Image (spheres, rainbow, N blue to C red):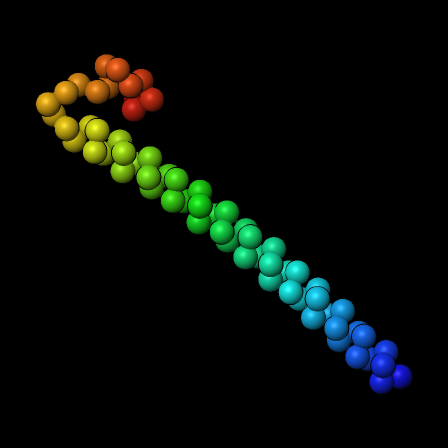
Length: 63
């Protein structure tokens, strides 16, 4: 009976570790998406902030 309980706890630890890994992967993916959005906004701000050259004429994705 004791061996059965030991195997059961190992299985539960593996399941818990799998859940943690999935949560970690989802968090990394979310952070990466947020970073890309911030990067794109920063690029737009720098380009639009430069008043010497009209970049919007050449870069339609800025609109």
